[in-house]
Amino acid sequence: MTERRETPLPFTQTGNGANTLVFIHGFLDDASFWRSTIQALEARNLSSVTLDLPGMGKAADDPGPFSLDRLAQAVASVVDAVGRPTVLVGHSMGAQIAELVAGMRPRQIAGLVLLTPVPLGGMALPEASATALRSLGGNPEGQRELRIQSSSHLTAADLDHVVEVGARVRPATVAALFDAWSGGHDAGRVPSVVDVPILILYGVDDPFVTRELVTTTIFPRFGRARIASISSAGHWPHLEQPAATATAIDSFLTEIGWSQTRQKTSTTRETTMTKTAMTKNVAGNVDEQPWTDAFEKRSTEGFEAALVPDVVLNASSLVKPIVGRDLVKICMGTASTMYEHLAFLAQAKSEGRTWLEWKARTFSGIEVAGVTVLEINAAGKITSIGIHHRPLEALLKFSAELGRRTEGKIDASHFYRLPE
Image (cartoon, rainbow, N blue to C red; front, side, top):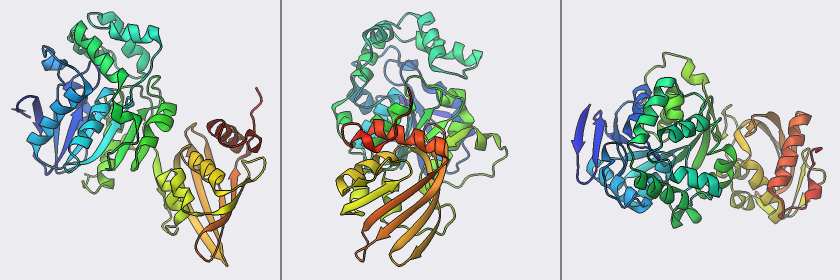
């Protein structure tokens, strides 16, 4: 490993591949947090670059300022120095910075991996929590308690290390960095301008960046994103489950055509990660069509293009049909974001009808399966939809959650309500 210093931000580069991963750490952290994950990567032809953001790690003496724009400019200087196609891997606050850098260097950035990401638009925290976080500088015991509360599988050695790293950050810097990431950036309050493949990773046990936050606030801003979860991990999956985190990154690199990976030598890495995927035709015998494409896009607009104005939606998860394109696209667009994984398995066609068999897993971890029946007119538009879920308990929970998420948009009488 050789260290290269570029003005103004030093960085460390491992490997000399044609493609580069730039790892951006989070609040109170430093470059060392990525070491185990980088060592576990299987991808070839890569260079891995780590750095200490201004105010943290070896750059703890930096006088500031510590705005998100300034931090993004510092990372952009590293991207410029690397001068190769780059995927940015950003953790927590580092994910905010990664998105900003991707917007600044669109020609060089080939993808983003956002690990337990803080929303770029910021997070409005309760006053007591905000005060406590701003005051963590010079308070190693407070930092230790924060790490414990926000993780589930940090080893004792890792815990000691992260506390030691965080304790080096000056109190004034801690407060300024907190204000930066919690206040967010104007670019995060509108749909993202970043148009590259994006993998959003979260820890199943993370109490801070939760599944709900990812699916309702972060994911919808991007046009080309998918979500994956890391089991047995909280806010620092790259420390708690480095092998699973590396597997997720390897998979993403393969998807964007970057890497050929070495033969796996252990099954552990295959089982510790629960991946979400965009709609996959795992059987290889389902045609691409407006319906499957709409699920892949996970947006109301995708469904709008596939439907006639007076389309009718019947489903075993609905108390009564939903009629009309505007309401159906809201229902289906919302439903598509509730799946952690959905795969179309098989299809059959006959005289204007298409039957699609599928299986899925919701973000609550519930396995469901079913058949969708589409009636399609001569213009290729869907006139009627019938969706049959199983098992009963799963579809009742799905119906109740769908009603909650569409509250104020679709009349609640269409959905089942769970007993209180």
